[in-house]
Image (cartoon, rainbow, N blue to C red; front, side, top):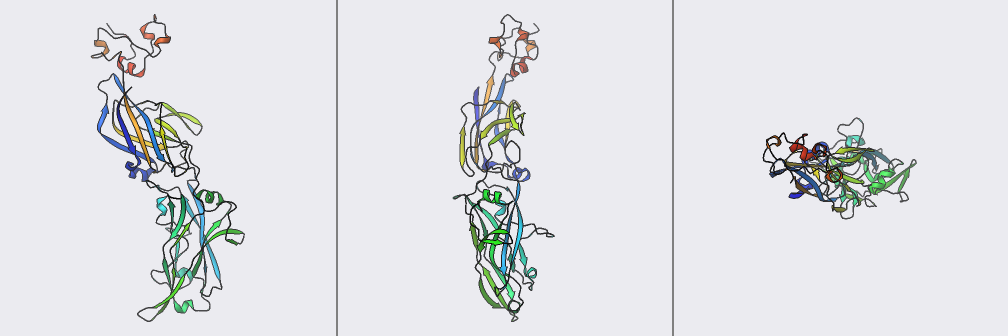
Length: 399
């Protein structure tokens, strides 16, 4: 094997369009100078030399739900209500480094008869007169990941609730002022809360209501007043920005391995998939030896040479997959070093034209030459794929 080129593939050049449509981590790139054989008596091979990646791949459920809500009171703090909503989550897209970027802007619940689902109310939902721009948020706005301490956190920006003063001071004023954000703990949520670091069995909880446990995040409001140009008096409640960091670093069950699939090579290696070994165009299987968020480098000492489909390589396409395809191999930091090799056949490289035009054929060096009877006919010699491509099924000249 003679190495003719080394290809370096980085996640920073991964096709974003392909990522968004198929939720797969696919690298596609064209070679400015194609790698090709000089004549038909050669073959091109490919082998993975090294692979460095940040482990952002985990065996969580594709979709799961968390229970979030808010406790709110009336202006005299004599009556309170609780509202809990289910927020469906999924594995989401990864940044080059980071976690679930679709939750950086908003998380949305599944309120019935709402399209699209919202996580806020207008004043009318609280039995008050609607005032433009005044929204009552029923939970946090975003979920973000801190790479420094590997913790997730909920966040919400500061906002202002505005009501008519005459409605706020009425004796029958309904609940309208948020005092606590709530995280409801149920039997079917404890497992995913453990993975995300929100709550682990044995941790203290702040609230217990109607047989349900809650984590409570206090909200401190500042009351103010204003008046419109028409002389209408308004009462405002300013809710400060809140960043609630989870108690534990995120713990996700990482995948056991990553398969590096390359569409440019022949499907000759066997890989397991759902307890079945089948041939796949796989360059290598990389064991995942790091925890979530850590970086790992694999240097392969014994290279696995896989033949390329054609006699030239002008485009490279690799994809990261796992065994059961239940985990979306989304965008993560990785650097892939791939070697391209040329295999020559010295025993037939002297041929100038086709076999039928040659009066003298160099000796055939079969792969099992040393285990075969040397007095046997040449037709009995087993040829490899390259020899068959040049010499054909006939192993002797017509002359």
